[in-house]
Length: 520
Image (cartoon, rainbow, N blue to C red; front, side, top):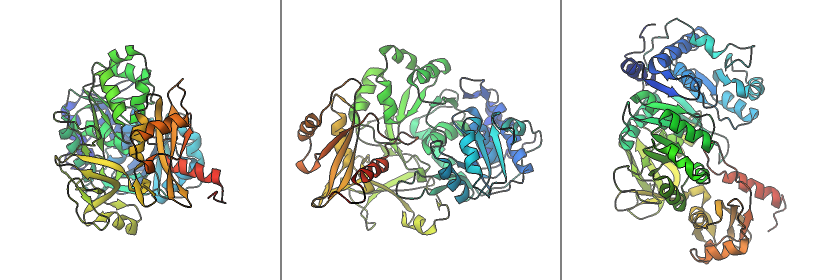
């Protein structure tokens, strides 16, 4: 196999340089056979060569619909080595939604795992742009298998890429405000973000192994858990689903040193028996992202496991990481931390005026990590920027030490009788209740007050929670206008693949319950 991508500055070229130095060092560790850097480099070369034989050219889009297995990484790298752009597909989407993304991105091919073959088949039938498919596994004999591409012994294409402009991935947002939008991230965006993450988290090649149970199709796991290890010589421990016992066994068996999670995962881990703590001995620290982590939950986890949790933040459009609490230095509860190296953050008014420390406004980001825009949506892309500053849609403030605090999503803000009500503030109060496991607050239209706060609460297992008690609990910490007008008890709350509560689904359920004739 030649080294046709060895001197490239894109992701594949940088990976090849690391693979040459690391050789037989393990990179992909899971319940199955371990993959070394050398084996992964060789296998992804075969995929790239196989794609070139199928007519894949520079800039073509290729879908990737696959759970957390080592072959996800093989396919991802192979697509990039072919000069194409990866379009990861959320495993929780319906065939209709999958078909929309494949058509919107004008994808030429699709890699899909045998476990999701039925949904893939339904989606493929309505996407005329698809010229070929590749199955990961052996579940569909009508299309070639990934193993056939891996065994290709021809050279991958020799390409020269503009790393700042050439797209590595198009990541579709969850579509909370309408149709999903494809965030265009270049090789330069992702390389810069991975380098900043290495520095911010003080990760060390050859020492650290990052456990990834978060879905690899999501920006958080893809950049922090996959690309950062690949480009910097770390190990990647892959777990295919979140089960506390399964995750804990993987940590113990494979010596993981960093755990990436979302708040709901930490909550479930706290419900496990005390003995599980011993299996986490190799973990140096945990990272929490994807959603706001209640302070009470963080304190409980750290007290029980003795492991620091670094809360950070960043939208898909920014690579995604923009800030994180430092491992060596003050960690401020409730804060998403300091901007990572190479990233600037400021607070803006609705008109784009920069605000002073302590003033609430929209969090804006500038840096090499910021996307090029949304695929095919020039006007919407321009609306998301103040000059070269990306508008995140998060409402927050910066303190005198430069730490950023998120108050809420701007679109989730509730205005009651002209006064701002922040759902996250109410949720933090509810999470402090000893019998509350999960909580979400939304605004419901009201004829007299504009909107009123409504709380959805999941009690701890076996706990008895009543609305009167919850209302009294809120009275001790919240103003009268902030106290939810109604408490709805649920067994679970709807979440996306990254663990974020789907408030749009709660709103939709409320609209259905109210019907077209609004009860107000």
